[in-house]
Length: 338
View 1 (spheres, rainbow, N blue to C red):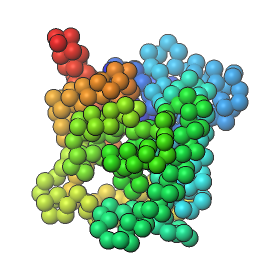
View 2: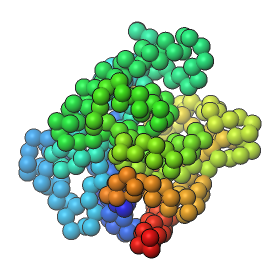
View 3: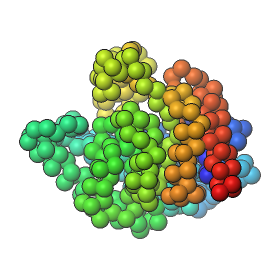
View 4: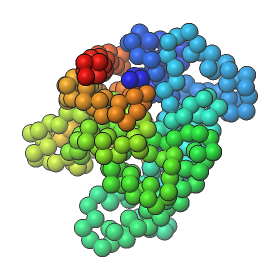
């Protein structure tokens, strides 16, 4: 399997330094953020790369001789946001990432499906998670039409550039589970839009990532290695949809998500947390996760995403890489024995 790291956790250092971290951990790929919620920290010459062969070659030259390659591009954001300051920018970021991937010889762009407002004239996205009443289904009908129009056009662009777009099944997106994936493909006839299988968002929804990989099959284009720990006592009281987040003030460190939207502080007594691999599920689980991915595509990228606030940047990557490499070794041993 091809194992790497999503570079957001390494935005505190230069690209050559980030590449060295990947190599030192015994991994071979770096998934590079190119826009959306986060800045393209490691691709400051993006606009030049799109038009200049010399700029492209200079950028690719940073990877030569390192044993590390580009493991896809990432532009997670909300391209369907009803506020054009956010939605239009993130939509263009997706299109630009597709063009950039083609220029760099890459064939995967990771992003999110996005989430529209609930009706014409809305200014905020509206996430329907339990459409028990008719009004909620009417909202979804409106949102799916917007999503289908955007992704039908984006799929054509991706096909023209020999790129496959992998959607992360993330909360506050219209596509956040396997049923939604099939619906998007059916509505659009997409051939180049599929899934980035991030196990973490399936765990907290009480889904089985291994079963989902096999259910989606060839629609799985890329994968993220991130774990979740269910805090059972809190989950029993608050449920996995607990909304006890705190809005951060302008005086506090916070992450801008576009326009006037910011990431909130995670709940203190959370029902679940993002953790490094092994802190939620053991090597045996991750071996079976890799096995299911291997059945779909033996050359698929599986990139660590580190969001464990209990561990430092490098410490968390070391923990995750140790588990992921052990799972990969166990998979390889079992394949050779069969």
